[in-house]
Length: 151
Image (cartoon, rainbow, N blue to C red):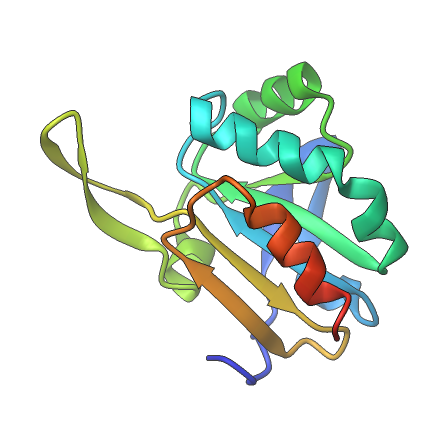
């Protein structure tokens, strides 16, 4: 998928709107997939994107967090954490499947299917420029920002 045009998709998102990839033409899009609202790693990751959001915006980048949680859960999470970006709800896993982020994982000693923490950068022409899979949160958001400044 790297260096290929990403097929358009649409997701219901916070703020009462849908997120359509095609609507972002001309902007760099950062999609970050995370397992669950209001869990420690996901909260820290979202806070890191929040804290660097002005720098992403200055680089003409749009950030969208995606998980399988409901819009209601997303709205609560976004409000509680003061996120200045939207969260997309992929309850039917269509976009998760498109990006191949659904994995068998171990949680509390049990096998379960869930989202592998992953980030994708799509350029202003809709081409996938970089992907990170199995993301470890510390330092990741800065790494994404540093990469965006190079495209």
